[in-house]
Image 1 (cartoon, rainbow, N blue to C red):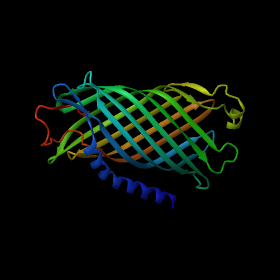
Image 2: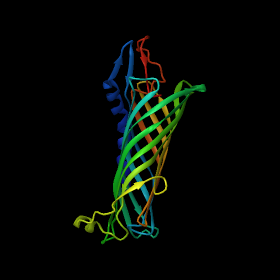
Image 3: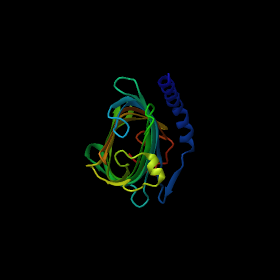
Length: 292
């Protein structure tokens, strides 16, 4: 019943996005530069739903599998010192998940949030291909709650990281409709993360046992990848994006293993479009530095 309610809520949110996009597109502001140049903020608002697989040995040695739901936002803008090449990006996401053990006799719920800010350098290649590469600083955290565990029912996740980020995109047309095919990968590479000792309860931490809770992370003990493959349909004043997101997170510390894997379908709107479709009311001398 709860799954059906969550699915209905996400569908209602997705149906409300186009109306929200139209209102934001009319109110979206541009930062003007000398010579008729502008750097509009490109905003993406999306909902997603998919499968989620969790192994959290602090709570249980069993894999828990279920469904994950989420909302996300992304805001990008060309920078004034080099609008053709430098792009600033901020994004945030929140996810709720519910899983069952293999025998479907115990359930686990999870709530996570993710925020990242970074800069990328873009280059245009032949055949209208655009490649970006850069870095970002991010915060990732949340908790997983095993409902039937009365001793240590919750595992907390807290992670601050420096990430590598890259993307490749190419526009094409379906009839007269401009479409942008894009693949973007974010790979946290150096991090500080939280993990208790093996068998250590959160009550002991509350009483003052704070030794050894913070760990330095790299790909060997704290690996995460976020890959979004998407197609954006630019209608002019509004664009719609649909895509597939693969996300994996592994953490190994103090003989405790945490593995989170998700496959999600993503649908979102971009108020104001992405600049592939020409608008008749645009000033001829105006140069617009879109992020695409």
